[in-house]
Image 1 (cartoon, helix red, strand yellow):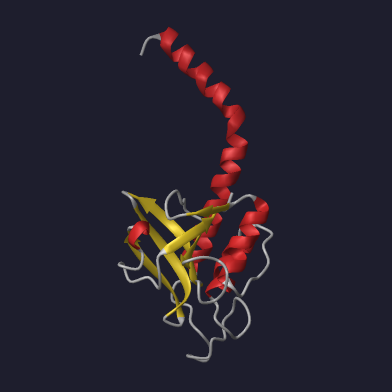
Image 2 (cartoon, rainbow, N blue to C red; image 1 turned 90 degrees about the horizontal axis):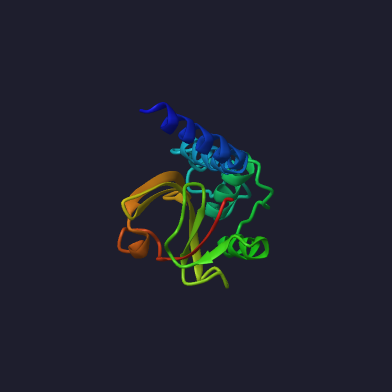
Amino acid sequence: MRPSLRLVLAGVVLALLGTVPVTAEAAGTRTKIVNAANGEIGQGETPPGSNCNPYGTCNAWCAHFATWTWRKAGINIPNYAFTGDIYYWGQRKGRAHSGNTGMKPGDIVLYGTGPQNTSTSVHTGVVVAVGNGKITTVEGNSGDKVRKHGPFNPKKAKDAGRPGNIYGWVSAT
């Protein structure tokens, strides 16, 4: 590489470094969420079939698990029991998105048809990987354990064996 080109490239890199702290912080938060979720794979209920879990109360606990991963990464989100509450929290924070595309690792996906009630917002999971138009999730209370699912097409989540299609998602950053 010619010295003048090297100098120009070095200048570009130095100019871009001014944006790194925000980007690095967001990437660090997402990495912490993914690591927290992946680190819990296999964790089950105690005793089995009781809905008692380490993430919240002894009831349906997919939302408890998802919000636990975010708190482990330093995000100040309540320990929600209802999946729709995650969407409403995201709306208040400007992080909620309708639809089933655009997710990144660390985001929370919501299954069903909408956040209104437990019949319309039926399950949730944490996105741990995205690629080739597919996502991989880690989900609490999936067969009474924390399990990894995917990769699957988020536009056809129900066809991939998830409890419903994805109606929305909440961004981690």
